[in-house]
Length: 140
Image 1 (cartoon, rainbow, N blue to C red):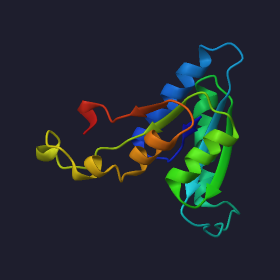
Image 2 (spheres, one colour):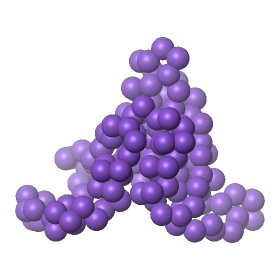
Image 3 (cartoon, rainbow, N blue to C red):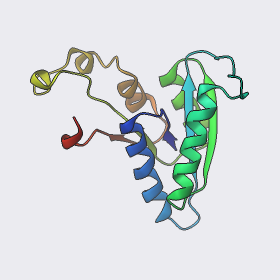
């Protein structure tokens, strides 16, 4: 399972998940997108979540993998963990962005000490191993 969020590092997580699944005979990939609340569809009848998931499906297909998209609303960390459990995920791939300024990246982050970020919640509570994907150094 891969958490899909439509960000650059989220796309890296999707690509890595596709590369892993392609190497597993009979492997399947589920993409989960969690919104904090439902947003009304645009004129085309699609919500922003639909658009993010559609792009992820197309990207996965271009990488040779069929992605089964799932959308839910609510708490992101809990929602990802519940989806992983419900779909019996063997591995959970998520993007974990480092939002600190460049000068502070070598310092200990208080959020990490407290474990209050979404990625920390998922890492601790997920029913399967979690692979955190970070933004490559050159892109920061």
